[in-house]
Image (cartoon, rainbow, N blue to C red):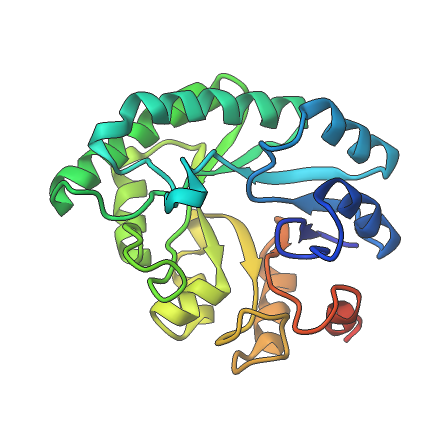
Length: 254
């Protein structure tokens, strides 16, 4: 379905993860993305992608122990070696699944001060970019609002832009989630226009409920019009369906 990539971590959750690939194909999608595929064997995911003629366009690095509260570990000075292990595992999955884009979550503010955490995050991103570059992979960072993830370290687009400027590598880019940008700053479309040169991937959900476009207060008719005219990458559907997954796609026909 054009360049829309349905996120299999937030949509089709009515069925187990490996059954969501078939659902994506049945609903007309050619592209999928997901957050954390690591509970599944690579071979099983490969089989579902091939069987359903789908392409995986994005996945996240392992976030640490999600069940114990981790939301990424890239800014934590006490977990640098663990982060490097997560990069190796992320690359293994991405290359095996032909996914060329990987999102790295910064994690929560660690015990260290802001300056130390930012230094560690920047150094870890340098390392990840170097390793991913050997495989032709792009690395994304994304500001996330602190209502959705309280204490999230990377929570401002201007901060993210500064970090990208420090790293200054062609394979490190901004992942622009319209929902998070609207929650953090407001005027998400204006921000997109300002930072378009840094953006490698887009995700959509409406604010405030994080449901499909058209269910909240955002002007998605204007957003989608601009994207269709100015943006050539994938658009990830990382929203939580308001009712059922199938019902949530009605906005696409408009």
